[in-house]
Image (cartoon, rainbow, N blue to C red; front, side, top):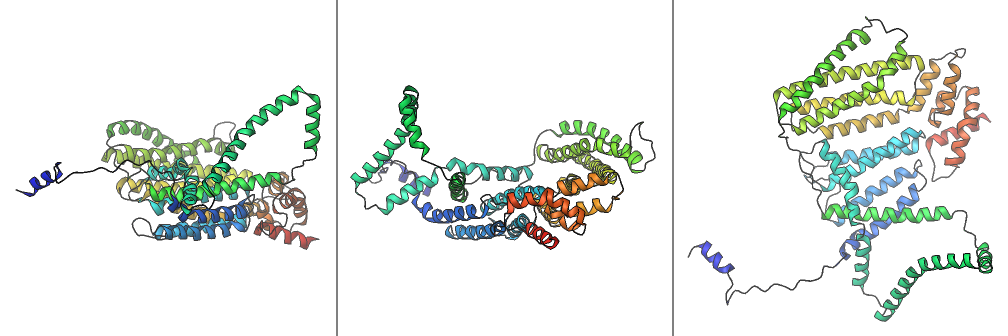
Length: 514
C-alpha cells in the first residue's frame, strides 16, 4: 500500500482510530498575560503624559515626555520579545530617522511660541509617531502613498474597536491572582455597586419631580446644597482624570492590537484598468496646460506682454495664486492616482511626465506671483510658508515622476523624509524672527506702510520675533503692551513645568529695559 493510501486509511474512522473532539468551551473574555505586560507601562505612560502635557503643549516637559515615551516603547517591545528599532525586515534606518525627528520636533515645541509652528509641529509629531509605531509592527515593503496613509489611519482608528480590552484583561488578571475576599462578600459588593448605578438616574428623576411639587422641600434642598462649594480647580481635576484614563487606554490598546493583529493593507499592485481612459482625459488636460504654460513663459516670466487695463503686477499675482496652487495639487494627485489605477502604458507615462513638467512651470509661476506680491505688501507667515510648501511640492513631484519609470522607487518614504527634514529646517530657522527682520528692513519709518508693518509685527507675530527689534525702544514698549503681557499671564506664568525658551528670552529682554 502506498503512502497516500495509508494516509487515507488513517484519516477514516475505525475501531483503532477514533477522533474524540474536545467539548466546546465558552470563550473567556480578557487576557491576564497582556495586562501583566502592558498594564503597568500604560499607567506610567498615562501619568507621564498627563504631568508633562496637560494644558502644557509648549513647555520644556515636551521633549522629556518624548524621551520617556521612547523608553516605554523599548520596554513594551522587550516584553514582546521584539527589538526596539528594527522593523519587520530587520532594518533600523527609517525607525532611527523617526526617533531623531520626533525628538527634534518636540524640541521646537519648547523653543518657539509661534501658534503656527506649535500647531504644525504638533501635527507632524502626531503623524510621524503613528507612522513610527506602524513601521515597528507591520511589513511596509512595497507600500505606496495610499497604502501608507491608509495604514496610518488604521493604526490610529482600528485599535479603538478593542477599547474594552484593558478592563477585561484587568478583571481576568484580578481573578487569576485570587482574591482573599469570600464569594459572598464579593457578591454583596457587586450588588451594592449595581444598586448605586441604578439609583443615580432614578434619584435624578424623582428629586426633580419632588422639588417642583413642594416649595418647602425645594427650599430645604437649596439650603443643603448652598453649603457645598466645588473647588475652583474642579474643572482641572476632571480634566486630569479624563486625560489619565484616555492616555492609559490608548497606550494599552494600540501596541497590543498591533502585536496581536495585522492591518489588512498589502503592497501596492499595478492597476489593470484600461489606460485608454486615462490617456483620453490626460491628453485634453495636457493641451490646456501647455497653452497656459506658454502664456506664463511669454507673459509672466519675460514680461514681454502688457497687463490688462486696471491691473498691477501685485494684484495680478495675488488674484491667480491660490487657483494655481490648487491646480498644482490636483496635478500631483492626478499623477499619483493614474500611476496606481491604470495598467502600465508608455504613452500614458509620457503624458503624465509632460503634465509633471507643466506642473513645474505652474509651481514656478506660483512662486513668482507670491514673490511679486511680497515685494509690494511685505512678508507674512502665510506667504513665507507658501514659498516653503512650493519647494516641498516640487520635490514630491520629482519623486512621483521617478516612480513612473521605476516602479520600486519608495515615493512615500522619500517624500516623508524630505518633508520632515524641510519642516525641521523651516521651524528651527525661526520664521517669525525672519519675517520681522525682513519687513522692518524693507520699510522706511516715513513710509505710509510703516504703521501697518509695525502693527503686524507687534500684534500678529509671537515672542519669537523679539530679537529682530529689541534694539528699537519704541517698538519694544509697544510689543510689551500688546503681546508680552498676554503671553506671560495666560500661558507662561513663570512655571518651571511650562518653561519655554522664547518666553524666557523675552523675560530677560524686558528685565534689562527696566
